[in-house]
Image (cartoon, rainbow, N blue to C red; front, side, top):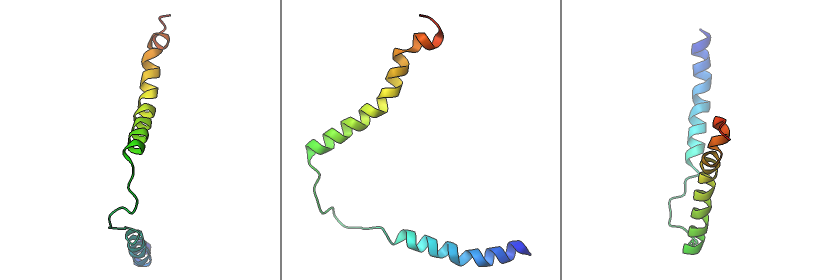
Amino acid sequence: MFQRSAAVLLAPAIRNALQRRCQSVISSPPTQKVSSAEKLFLGGGMIATTLVIPAWVLYHIREYRGLK
């Protein structure tokens, strides 16, 4: 009995939450062009930060294995 009443009470709230979430989508061309230099800089930063931890682990692999 409780499950049915909870479902009846929550259904409108869930429906409204989904509708609000979808209203923030903007489908138009970008208003400002991002320069190639900025794309290159940001892309390089993302690649570098992604590879830092694996490079650190590979550099210190002997210490982790106990072979100094």
